[in-house]
Length: 343
Image 1 (tube, helix red, strand yellow):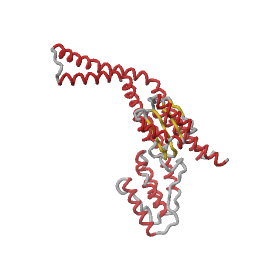
Image 2 (tube, one colour):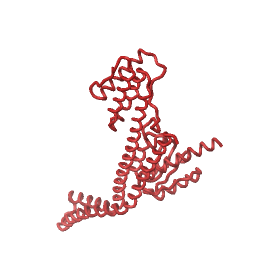
Image 3 (cartoon, helix red, strand yellow):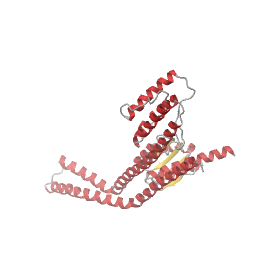
Image 4 (tube, rainbow, N blue to C red):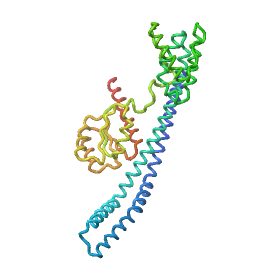
């Protein structure tokens, strides 16, 4: 097995472990969801019921004094009606509150996972840059490497590797110099790299070279920073869920080529009808049963049947499961298309 294959295997295992960690945590959150909702309902009632009792007590005092046309009383009655409605809607309000908290927690988990993958990529980048420096066999090529390195300053600083790379660059330039050690520290490591970078640009303008030094991707699996959804493409239509969930998923897919059409439970009938029209040319159709009304689900299923589409039903209120379904569904569709073209 080649070293590059070992690197690929290691990266794939790390990605799977990170994904499994997020999925297990999402499952745990879903299992605790009902318990948290009940806690939230109790909190809502504990805070609103005393307020309603106070309002009703004052209204009774108005009654005892036979005051019916008071502006203050009218405002109190309106407020009492509002509080009663809030109490009636307590289960829904509690569920929305808990789900917002769950999504925020899922976002932190996904951010931590992406940060871990990015740092792993950055360490591989450092090794690629060190290899690139060591492989240069003339003074101008070694100096020219500074141009490629400079584009990764922030990544190297993030893992504390800028110093090591710049010092390796200085050593290589001096090793290949016919005039002795011409490269040296000039202020900070970043300032030194910028100085060598400017010298490399001057060299390019004076010395004609056939190629420019570019770092290899021997240790990295890709030149680009990790982004689990950047390669996804296709049209995805989703029914159900809620606005916060839709917004979070859309944000995760912002660097992809996914066209996301989403009709949540809060959207009106007009938007639902517009979304239904997209089913016919959708690459993937999802129905999120959490928050999806019966009428919304039934209508989506009817249109899907007419369009000869098979929807995936997802019983969740979390973000991770939906992202997994989108990723798996679009990649499966891509593989199927490739197979049909090659057949």
